[in-house]
Amino acid sequence: MTGASSLRVLHVYKTYFPDTMGGIEKVLLQLTEGLSRRNVRNRILVLSPNPTPSVIVRSEAEVFRYPITFQVASNPFSWQAWKCFPEHVTWADIVHYQFPWPFADLLYLGHGRKKPSVVTYQSDIVRQKTWMKIYRPLMFRFLNSVDRVIATSPDYQRTSEVLAQLGNETEVIPNGLDDANCPPASEARVAHWRGSLGEGFGLFVGVLRYYKGLETLVLAASHVRARIVIAGDGPELDRLRALAKAESVTNLVFLGHVSEEDKAALLKLASVFVFPSHLRSEAFGMSLIEAAMHSKPMISCEIGSGMSYINKHNVTGLVVPPEVPRALASAIQLLVDNPRLAKTMGSAARMRYQALFTGEQMANSYYSLYQRVLGR
Image 1 (spheres, rainbow, N blue to C red):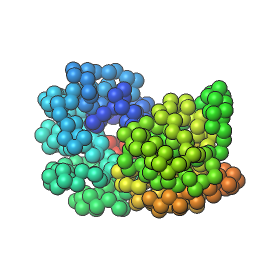
Image 2 (tube, rainbow, N blue to C red; image 1 turned 135 degrees about the vertical axis):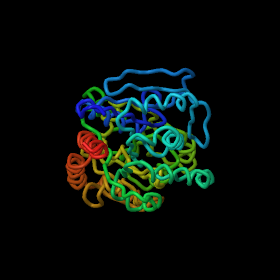
Image 3 (cartoon, helix red, strand yellow; image 1 turned 90 degrees about the horizontal axis):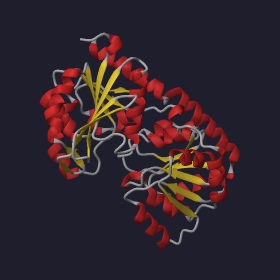
Image 4 (cartoon, helix red, strand yellow; image 1 turned 180 degrees about the horizontal axis):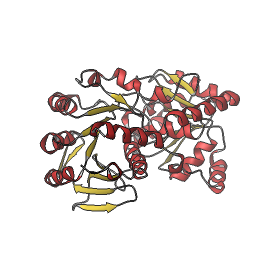
């Protein structure tokens, strides 16, 4: 075994930069950057739509990308990754898997069982109920075999039926993000969006997916005396635009994809950040972390997920029932109409972010966990 100063960690997930830029990818980026500052060597094994294997050397990690052979229920599999995985396991001191990804379960059970391993349980599997009946035995064999299973919030740890059935006790390490990865916007970009949208609007930023509760936001918008801005692209965009047109919603703006700098500018100008996800696929909510980082009050829904761990009701924002447009509209209007309350909650959100959700804290917690698993 190598010394602590040269700890080698293999991270396993289905995708990473530059192919995709989602929430878990941001978590992996932040984690590997933080671990690198602790003299950890990181490899990230991912699958890619590119037809040939490749290695990208980034500052935080070496990224080994293997071509997708086929997909089942949106889960990619790779024959070449299967063949090459034993070599990576041999290199590593510890392997860190991100769940859910059924192919990772197979990698572990086929080649990784002799190596110390941890799993970050990012979400229950919500949508694929038919496939879940087939996958369930494999899932529990995997989760009950690894050395540690990590939940990202005590709320999700408490409410997940899967975590409750594990033989091993789970731990909690929240996902985190550092200010350095979300730099402020230039005055020019702030001025651009101020001229286009004004100030004091309700803002959603994220990928437009089925579990984001955006249909409720569209319906709520007609009951709000303020502009509602939806920034992001995704599979739900056309359906949401059609719904807004059918409901004659005139105060709703779809911006499509925006850059990181434009996102920062929009957060600066918004009165409130609205995140109405209604299904447990939204297990945490990295966008809420970014809003809290920018001192914005938040509105989220109570679904027993990490959203209510980030956003504490009547402290950092408001928590409303899912899929109730009038309740969502009332919460938005309350914070838009009360700038002093919004500022107080935004300041509390920033303080809670600094106390619990920085990337440095996340990296430190995982580094300590690795040491304990390795018995160092």
